[in-house]
Length: 527
Image (cartoon, rainbow, N blue to C red):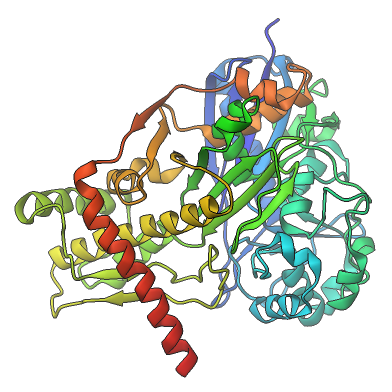
């Protein structure tokens, strides 16, 4: 009997599952929505039971579409957002919401309730910050857990295990409390390259000396691709699989995308140094791998073994990209709801306006896209967005011009990150894009022309599920190691090269972009 794997991707709004064969072909795919609770500004919460139900729906749906018998699924793995799940000593849910109750037991990755705690972490100057770009982000685990202990002490005292979401899913599937080297190194200040990964003096400094025990943290992390054991009988029944299916360590969703795009270059260090993964949807993550440690200002990492074992990976990103374009539509009087049809209509009108007025549309309108802070390369969670050059025009065409220039600002933010990486020793000239942005023709054009890179996009945009499938295949023993699995399951792609005629105008826009950052800082200094 042929053997297959199941890859599960839990994003901000849904759980997706795919049944994948040994060569990476997607045989069946299904998706199920998950709920989000927004009780107040900067607070966002999930229900982990709702997430697990969505995962089970998606896996069963994918299995049905693939028409593969459950016993043929040799392995399963999970990727997820870096959200924080709190479970009790009895294994039940423990609430993280000021609105009360235990249903909302998960702090969503984009939640920024812990800005003050993040600043306190930064002020310690502890050496764990050397692997966080020098600044603690409110999207990391530590400040969120500080907030929980301070503001909901009853919940803190009831906690018996606290997980990154991917680790919660592998625990739910296998019963193992092991944690992934990816989640712990990237979000929990675990230094995977050192013999003593946990820096307990840091936890003590920020008032979390009891975190290792409260969260049931293991002394060491499990390498990406390692097997955690078979599905439990209960999980197998809920997922529609069998106890013959082995569970592999999970990863953060962006890291699965990096494996799905860059993992096949693992055997060629010089080539690996030229490629950058851009996993772009609600937010954007850029991922660069290297066989040697290459820190960069404002970046997260580099982290040892957080993607491929034996390899360093550095992460930058933009906290709001797809979400920012949605916001611009809602903000404008001619906008309405940011449905897929609305985005498409705007893109079509922008194309017509550029034909009528020339490709340099709205050249005096400029946008700094930091409406939810600047994750990289400035590492400033307090940064705000800036729009310069608005006329007294509330028409649909004015919305289209603002949307276009916002998209330009997003692309220039990627260019800023890329140039910072290259100043640190990379020689990146190729950008692999996966995620929702591949459906936006404006962004795909700008990633080539405004960033100045060769842009590679998958023919079938499933890089995140492909990366997770490679982890599952490794854990199931279908490949000897993760690098081999990534190479063997690599999918077809296509290239877009930058337009030389666009270079001068985007070089000008980039100079303006950097000048606006300087002016914003000057204004903030006055305030």
